[in-house]
Length: 313
Image (cartoon, rainbow, N blue to C red; front, side, top):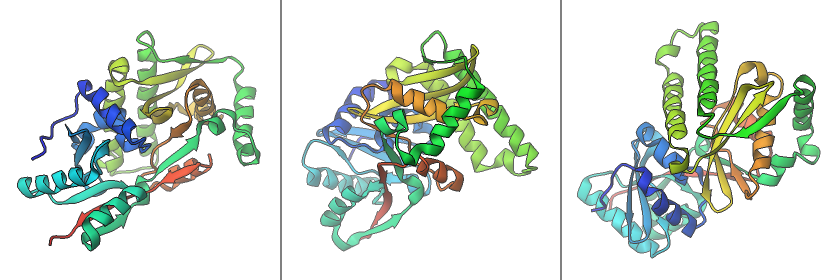
């Protein structure tokens, strides 16, 4: 059997090596996501024979094995998963499977493999240079947002998140969370207190807290946007594989969000990632407004993912 365990900070080097070995650019395999979301999705890992194996104990599209990542014999790795499924009574199913991985699973399992797409899991991946410059006719509206921001705020500065200003980053998250709760009340959402959205916001709050407590150990690179010396927005990312960065969190308090704050911190932070080739801004979780926002930045690639169930022989 594969010996699965909860991911730990000490697993970062091994996980990063396995992901780098195959140049995988999906946000689900960034160490930041594997570690910070381990409680939310019940994520477990196993490093064996040069492969990273993962198992998600979450619901729906976050349940099952993932495609093994690493430099080795993929047939051997899939056989290990088959054996583990049989011995542990885990269902033989795969989550977050990309198109190229689907082809491998089809070759291995044949007609036993049944695919179900979930576009809410698709990653939106951008050329870093495009986000940093916003050049070209496609980005005219975004440049207008930047112009509005510059007209409204003349005194602003982007600073890296360090141990000295983590409280400022946390303050932004607390303000954002409070504003979200107030919006629920304003919308007279009686179910908000027990909604999945609220649970997700709480899980994200905990993940942000943990990220700020372990910046170096996780490999977080983040920034805070100060306006007239006041913390107004923050963002955090980790590197998935060489020169490919994953934006985990991006928060702007409402006063500044209304005047181009999201466009501003997006552009400024992309400019600060001097070694970045691609920027993964993760999935839209089937929220239409979020989907439109991600599409408005014209992704270079939309990395679609499927859930794959393997029928019994």
